Length: 574
Ligand SMILES: OC[C@H]1O[C@](O)(CO)[C@@H](O)[C@@H]1O
Image (cartoon, rainbow, N blue to C red; front, side):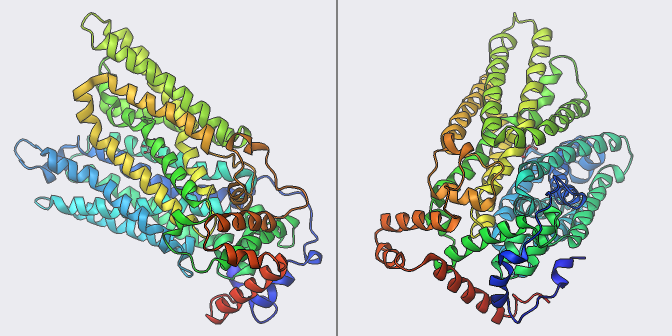
């Protein structure tokens, strides 16, 4: 189980331990830091199971609608197996509404001292299983129980879409953080593909098992994640913020694969301490601060925009409506179509895990969006000028369009698909991280819903020229990344925060390092004093603070915090 929690700390309270923990003499191990340990690899895989829950549930439903027994149970008319549009819509789309709500409440829940990131993941897994119970129990005439089940599963998928990147982003070693968070998307794509394959296998089953088998199988993902996470520590950032310095130390050491007295552990602890000291001076965080805090408006809007654009790239257009395109070249089996698209999606996500660290987020996201822009321009033009034109050579054009659809998916899967999740887990300070990731995930879900809902209406209206809309969004995505998103690869979460506070130009950010002779505290303090004086009312307060020594101030604030959390009975590591 979680060894860090059971370790003992010499001394009475974390307040007394903090300074000692950070003394030079104690961190004398400077052996080589492993690139990736088995434990961290397992964490990446296990926590990403949240992605399987997501992908599996979204992939499942389109297959269900083709299954006779599913239609028989939930049809408006049992003779003709007809499901009305409204009933279909409610069963399919309610998952997205659930996810939106789940994502929004996940942030505040994860900030709870006891639940934290780790136990809230368990909680969301339990809710996922509950949703499955409803889905399996539903039968004629209670179609709405199926809908309820999907809403409840949706809560959980939304909650996990916040907690997975939050847990991975806060725990992973800085040099492979991007790749680890990208595993989440990899598992979403694997989940979609598994769902397609299982549906394909179950469609010919007779009787009620037809759709209950796929739902039953999904208990397994949630069970593995919910139980498996108990064997991993809480994230270092969550522990540290709640005064559990010793647990934070062990958590960093575990994920870096080094001893708790390693220099890299010290660097992380120091950075967390410097950040926390400054944060605590600001008092208790309030919800509005995700927009009003230092550089927070910029960052919150940026993260939400990145996630909205991830959907507006138009990837789901192919996943939801790919079948229709493939039919134009005679591939009429929708299950096969989905399996082809799903497989391209999975396979091409792998290079993304490598590229995100090798070339950095900015390069991948800009080139990825440019590539998708090009694919959509070709795709929409062929569809609009050739396919919708009666003289067009449908078969050849159809094949070329499929090639471009696959090239598009390859670009999405290796760049925007996974990396949108990575960057939104990195650009926020600890104080607001889970709440901001929640807003970003909610933005993803909202646009996901919007595309799923609006696409059939718009395509029937303007046909393939709809593709130009996605092309335009991809063009906007290039500009947003180039002008607004700083490079986060290789930097600690604390350095990334400082980089934002210092208003480093995004296009110059790849080379940015903390200025020589400065620490994160000193740069942050300069930045926050500048911020305060811009905001007028706080100017005099920060002005007078500026006279005293930053270090003394930081220590006393920290000790007060640890004394308080200690008194609350929580900060002791026992
Ligand atoms: O990041 C999640 C998004 O990626 C996809 O799974 C495609 O790979 C979409 O269906 C989903 O909206």
